[in-house]
Length: 95
Image (tube, rainbow, N blue to C red; front, side):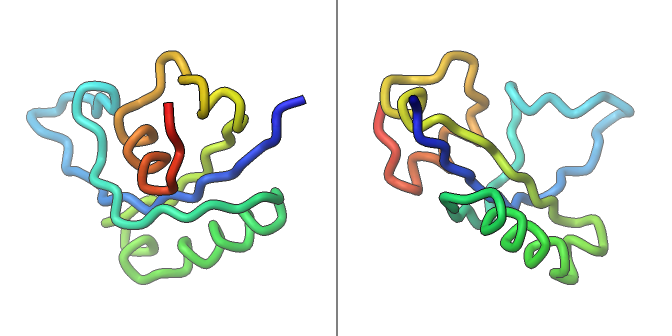
């Protein structure tokens, strides 16, 4: 069974240009901080801490929790967004 890792990401929110929708695959948000946790409870505590930051509360940054299977990360996950791949690479994940 694959071990689960939780990646908590803090990213900068881009303004919407010309009324178009944001496309995370083509133009992902800039990652400000990325941390990992091994339990859902620890991930939730980090997420709540990120959500209490002034820039997140003002809507200029966004916090996200990504749930990853370690086997999937090590052997390459299909259709992984570029922002998630960069965050996982910063945490030491290898394809």
